[in-house]
Length: 140
Image (cartoon, rainbow, N blue to C red; front, top):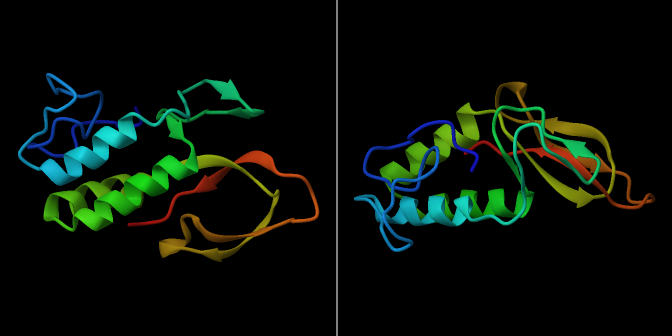
């Protein structure tokens, strides 16, 4: 769904599309491959150019709902293998990516992350109704 290229030889689900022959077909790097498969099956996403919830994805990658992205992040961290770490670093740290969710309106970013490229913590306006908006993903 939101992958640019083949992340890692030895995976069948990590990268653009997948090369698996079935839903139970995994590469040599089984643990990260399972994370990527689950990520690919996120039911809530915006393809490039697609609009929904008042949001438009102007990026060249698909944007996923934040819960799917955090599930992917935690899955790769939990796998704890070199392959999973490499995939996590590429996806979360080198590709400056965002996700979207319904939350209180963003007032400001009060903590920038690594190299100030993205927001690590937001100040939200809890006095207003929740709205759909984009949030920066954490670095890996």
